[in-house]
Length: 265
Image (cartoon, rainbow, N blue to C red):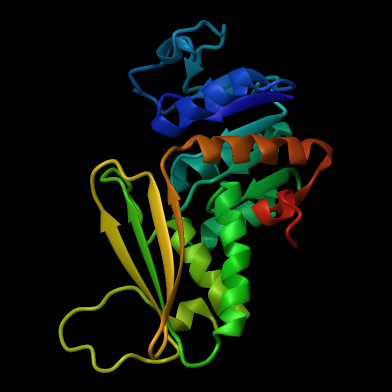
């Protein structure tokens, strides 16, 4: 399977390239980055100390030439441009980009009518196992427990709450028959009044080089249950993304997430 990587010179892009090069059955066929990126024109494996013969380019058509699948962990505006090109060229897409608005999500769903797409806020197998644990916990703790989602990431992350935190909130809300758009509380300041028992609160921490910590707290009277996932490396995201790409091998069209990839639905 031929794989192209978007954001090739970024932290996640380098990790993805490293895993593609180390994985049997997949080949790095393209490396894409934004115009003006310092790494443009360099071999995609330069920062890893090896030659791949694939040059990092800002030309989407060139990066996708010969690719079966594009893996994209960039930003919403870039991902949507890449997605449109992939759709036009018949290239499947795996994306872990977060921060999409409703229009962006609709564009992804529309593209999936023409190409296979895996779209997930988090590609980690462990995080997706956590989603299932949260679903069970929410059903068991549906009454008498206040729910809070706390997440922490590195200083460079540009969206908040994280896509994974929002996905956790959505899993819990769905299990409880609620709509996160109406019950989610994303900021508290000043005199807020007593807590609405039906709300799901979010708290965000940004600092240092934290890869990603997520905790969902079910706070009851006399006890507190916390379900936590902590990432110490982006390796798990890269491994999950490659697993998702292989999942798409026999999927000409359709919108999937990591729950589909892992057979958890």
